[in-house]
Image (tube, rainbow, N blue to C red; front, side, top):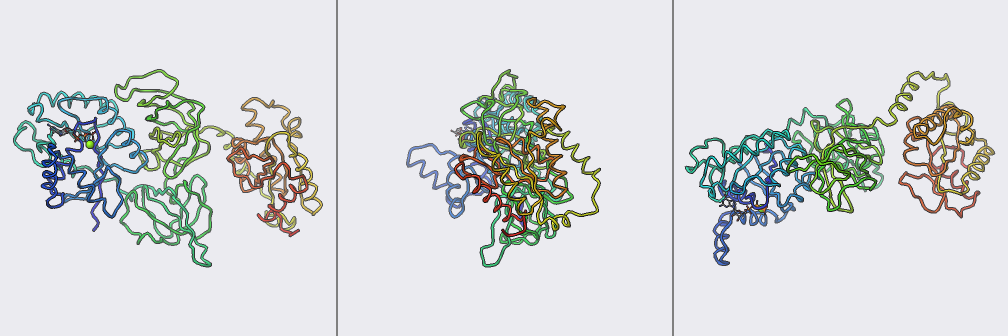
Length: 596
Ligand code: GTP
Ligand code: MG
């Protein structure tokens, strides 16, 4: 049977003894290769350097690194009960980066405080970060007790002070342990120096940490890492690959990918070894699907019928900022969650705290080492979970200029935007009176599939000319097509609303979508033009019309949008060529059936 692997991180202020405690633990548990200790003692002696237990850690890392790549701050060891990965957090920036990116997933933490120095800034910051990262099992080690003559009072003061702090940030420590990494007190055995403490030692505490919650009870989550094609001839299957964040997946399970909502059934597990009950967070899997659906990296695979992730692009988050530059409004950052990466802007700051003092600071930006509750606005929707469901789909990092500059957890979605539009569309769909003539019969009669061709691009271009010519050419070829000028709506359907006001824009696009929806239902090809349609406009439109029915044509040299353009028309193309290109694309995509 596979032994569980348990990840433990050691955090704390610089020089408080993290590496020493880890080194000593390795020593006491005889996890070191034979002769290693003597070898290192000898090297120290030769270099006239005092021996440090922390060196053992480095030596061990060197050994373990042979053959496998492990990140520099990790080492392995085992007890009777299970296997451990110990993460030594070297500096706190590295720590947060690793922790939040999931490079080092920790199930529990030891927070080390120097008995002589007492609680320092980073002791508190690290505590705060643990709480933000959702690491609830924390044991506090008051280290270097030998330096304070194993004084109980000194220990109690520190434990008391730090406990109060933890209480404020909602962490209930598993225990406090007075230790000496250097002398070995309370590491594996209690020893005789601190008769007044008969609680658990570091090793006993390790084995009492609880393993991750039962995987089987969690909904299945796997952020899609990549989709690989089989390379052999004629094999059109694709493997969807990623690492499991929670839950279990079985053959024949129906998977739904979010945010797209695409659905298929698991056909087989591939190439990553037999897929069995040995499931744990971080396990890499790959599977094929029954249907050839198009899935992108960044989507989250879930199992149909289980709890759905939240889909949103406006998030209330707790964020810890590490960037040299403060986080400011209006600036574009990258937001990374799981395998997803999307542009983000800071929209609102509710609260900024100094993470070491927990003092509330009133400011309009988030400085290095600040903790903030704020609102982030993503460029497009992502799928995420709340921290209690799955941390892997909850923790995020923010990248500024290629540097991880912040990270945190998502508290909830604030995406009430367009909610009423969505609602109205939902009701419309429910109340929709269906025709006796079904869609396909109509398509066959007209030799076309309905589509909205949205011609957009930079200003002062030949958009309208192209639109009119396109309508004409399609009509001549016997297609049912209509050029709907938005102007024609403004003074008619939109007569009661004034454009320019923000909520009127919503209403305008809602009406536009409703009209387009009726025409699509009627089987029409609809041509429209709009100057520089934005993603927000398109989002709004696509609430009312199925995105698969929208073809985006961009006119102009420079495509200055990140929307997926279906047809790109250069300025110097000429109307005729432009129309030819659009028609070609319609043909290829099967919107029109007759070959020309
Ligand atoms: P960084 O990785 O730099 O953040 O430090 P760290 O927390 O890993 O501390 P490290 O283990 O390197 O120890 C720092 C210094 O404190 C070393 O000189 C250790 O010998 C000393 N030290 C660590 N633990 C003890 C202890 O229990 N007693 C005494 N007297 N010294 C200790
Ligand atoms: Mg260290």
